[in-house]
Length: 341
Ligand code: HPA
Ligand code: ZN
Figure 1 (cartoon, protein in one colour):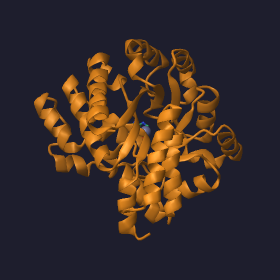
Figure 2 (cartoon, helix red, strand yellow; figure 1 turned 30 degrees about the vertical axis):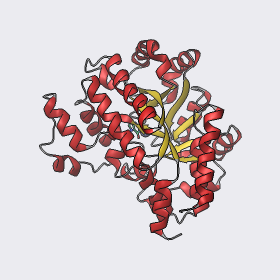
Figure 3 (tube, rainbow, N blue to C red; figure 1 turned 90 degrees about the vertical axis):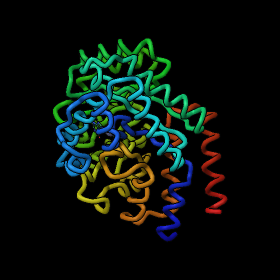
Figure 4 (cartoon, rainbow, N blue to C red; figure 1 turned 120 degrees about the vertical axis):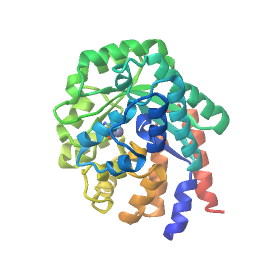
């Protein structure tokens, strides 16, 4: 298919995304508007200067700007509006299901209560379900540069809102913060019924992916692109059918790969791994979900069938119940069957 047709196909096919940070969907214009409303000082004097600062050397240089951005989120309405803007974008590119990360500790540390964060986000998600027919689930991430004790306190705080949260994740600075640091808090989260996932093998070594599997008992690995350095790890991921949530544009922006053309996505697929495509922090990394698909389609010369498989995988790897999974996969297949008419 020529690129224009493929662009439309990718935009219209019903898709799911399993790795997107809600704080990473904060567009610079919205950040400035909230900064003014809430009287929060930003380091950058204009939207343009801020956008120019979006040139990251690595994960840490991104996280510094990302946490600065989160400082403007104060009220329940701010969290509602942030989430609603993401939902409107999803509607336009037919992302009918998403499993969305949020970082409560980055708000709690600024004295924004858990209740404010979760209510703002989940009210928008409920409206998205009703008004736009978009399905969503929420995953609470622990910040791995903080202590396990802080994660444990956050876990306790989440309990009254347990029905709004499907799982727990692990994000922030990976190097020197191995998954094993969070073994106990994950064990406790699992005992409460949360489903475990973790970022691992983005910058960190394959050993971190092993730990995520063996110590945290994760059901998905977020990123995981460094798994190819360890053959026995690849075999284990395949044996256990553990999906990887790969984020191509993010990986390039954070210097994991020099360009999309050098991304190892095709090797991951060819190795027989269970791969999904995701946007991570789309407001910072130059594209939402469709741009990630289209980017790898072009740069890696994927086929239309590769795209269809990746899209099906996004539902198969989700935490949807079997009935919802099946009905969404039926929508995908009927779209594929009818082509572009
Ligand atoms: N990696 C780790 N932590 C994060 C990311 C990421 O890509 N995005 C937001 N927090
Ligand atoms: Zn991420």
